[in-house]
Image 1 (cartoon, rainbow, N blue to C red):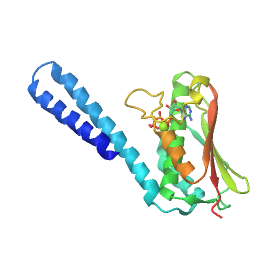
Image 2 (cartoon, helix red, strand yellow; image 1 turned 120 degrees about the horizontal axis):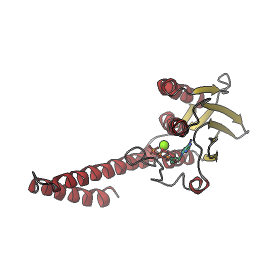
Image 3 (cartoon, helix red, strand yellow; image 1 turned 60 degrees about the vertical axis):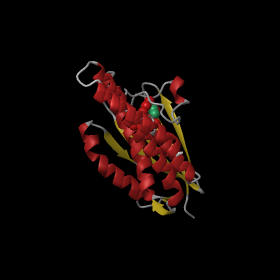
Image 4 (tube, protein in one colour; image 1 turned 45 degrees about the horizontal axis):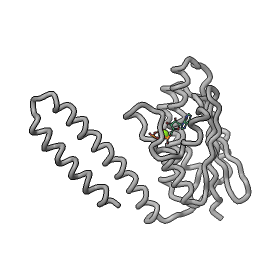
Amino acid sequence: MAHEIGTPLGVIRGRAEYLAMQVEGSAVKNNVEIILSQIDRVSGLIRSLLNLAKGDKTEESEAISVNTGLLTVLELLGHEFRKNDIEILNLFDYEKPTTVYGQAEKLQQVLLNIIMNSIHAIVKARESGRTQGHFIRFSRQDFGTQYAISIEDSGSGISKENIDNLFRPFFTTKPTGKGTGLGLATSQWIVESWSGSIEIESKEGVGTTVHIYIPKSS
Ligand SMILES: Nc1ncnc2c1ncn2[C@@H]1O[C@H](COP(=O)(O)OP(=O)(O)OP(=O)(O)O)[C@@H](O)[C@H]1O
Ligand SMILES: [Mg+2]
């Protein structure tokens, strides 16, 4: 697949570069540069998709701690929470081990994608006038054979038209250049590779809750 996409993209890029040289100094140059930068964007996306697909096959699963994963990501995002005045309500019981079978780095990627979406949704809610009392709440439930990790935010919420499209690759409501629309699609592939699932509930103008279900490691 890499060749089938990479080769034509390479040809297109080469011709566009050649064209850029030929139109040096003319008004067309600007358009050709836009074409070049958009080709690079597509190439970048395809590279990340291929890395993801490769990673799933080569990386072994092992027993990993959801508690550690969440604490790591929360620490990483501490600055974002403070900057955006978001209260973190952490109902996670870190005394209880929450061990699943997967890859620690992938788990962090999933949590990061979902929490970043919550931060963006809160910024959006503020922009539309709902300025006070914003939070992200984390909780964990034990369902016997699996854990549910829930992430609730007070952000913009999701409209009924959009709710069924969230996991579609490249679906985004963010402005061009801001979102690739791969965050949730990627997260779903990862969690499904562990035989888990992701569910999203939302109310426009109120907020969103993402539930991640992951089988226990034993
Ligand atoms: N917590 C949330 N609150 C409101 N809308 C959300 C939330 N999470 C996801 N969405 C909606 O789902 C869309 C898809 O999310 P996804 O993470 O897949 O892509 P993205 O955030 O747009 O881009 P990126 O690839 O950078 O993550 C978002 O554009 C947004 O409209
Ligand atoms: Mg996202």
